Length: 324
Image 1 (cartoon, helix red, strand yellow):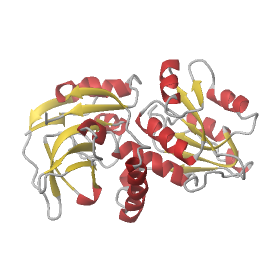
Image 2 (tube, one colour; image 1 turned 30 degrees about the vertical axis):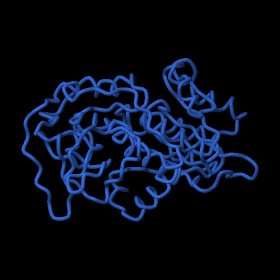
Image 3 (cartoon, helix red, strand yellow; image 1 turned 120 degrees about the vertical axis):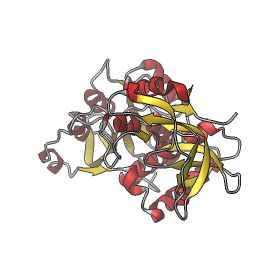
């Protein structure tokens, strides 16, 4: 079979389309004929050697996919730690979900990582099932990289929860497009410091939660954007920099910082099932729909990774692997 292989550690240029052995399923695993794969920033980190637990190269790239389950022909979307960017994958059945009717393979491949991550961010923030954290007032949420895959998913979910959402991006055009999804307050961080913007937009009060995936100085800055008892949910470090945080900042307003790692949570069957129950209900009601900004053939995997690395993507970047 053909597969996108990480030939060595480095930048996106180390990705190669190669012939690879067909997967041999372990007991209990399912075989899926993959049609499309969703590219995530975790994939960029994997190529660079910065994603924990990844085997040394060469290995097949990718952690998110959609295709057809070979056992019964059902269209499915799934999540894996690696080996998703190939024509076939052997995978755990509990991390396969049916592709909603009417969705393309590309849309299915854009769902699992983004929407489970966004769901768990609201869960960690204590905002699920609580449309008004303060009586008569919606919760305020600051979403970094709001025009990306997780960001656009978080906006769709936040709209359902009645949240007042603030989002950062480098482009007015991107912000305008996310506002069409339900974002109320867009902040172009190239034109205005988002910490100052939050202070002004909330009249000095701050937000209840920040979804933070930048790392470096932004962890501390995000804490300073919080109101009393607020929470920063950290789920990445796109800058590649170690988090900078003086924990004494947390004392004054009872704030807290929480980690979110989908790799860890995906092993918690009960949590994943509960999340899927809610996500599938929202999806069947037409409330959630992945934003796919770019679809590229597998031969252009390097270009797909660069879109994320250079912050030029809007919504999800998807690779077409097999199928029509």
